[in-house]
Length: 264
Image (cartoon, rainbow, N blue to C red):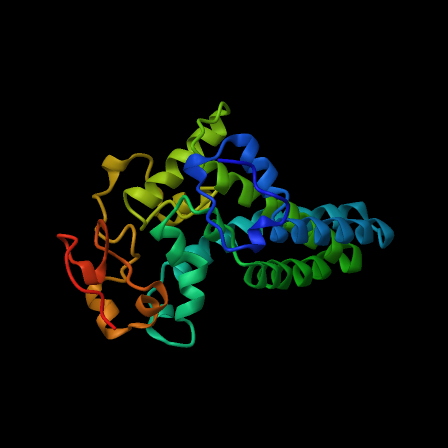
């Protein structure tokens, strides 16, 4: 795949991680508008953390708290919101659910929908990190926690890209998290909710080390939004112009044999 031009993510083109090299990914990652926004917010926040600096202990505690809260927050959001079934049941939230997670499980190699939407990620991370940091370390703690939260966000996003890239990592850490995450996408989505940190999966009993530990899930691609669910709650289906069925890459209207007439 040719390296994308700067800011080409603003255009409606597909970026297939299974066709990209590591160099393609690095270039595309650091020219993606959301990553640039995270970096900008992070740098500005850390500058203000230095400007408002008062207590090294409280500032470091704010950053340490961010390091703990971020993976816990991701686990809770991933398991209880992104993999919930209440969002697609309302026309008010169906489009959001489709964008923030359903599309990613439909096509895990499409870089456009792998990244979290900026309008969702920035307020969520900022809304947790800034108040928490302020309670621990005042203004400096607030800025430090927010800035560190943006660093962690970029790290998570890049590791998530590596997990779907057609590339075998040399680092054991990256190999392990890639194996666990791909199991979540292609074997059973009801486990391994972490991205770089699986401590909370272990603690809450959703961790599985190998595919043999859990049966193959029939909803690994559609997250429970089956053909039957699409009839009852049609909004995601309409937005997707048909969606994948249970365990097969066909549109609902095509049927298991790939035949059928697309509805009006």
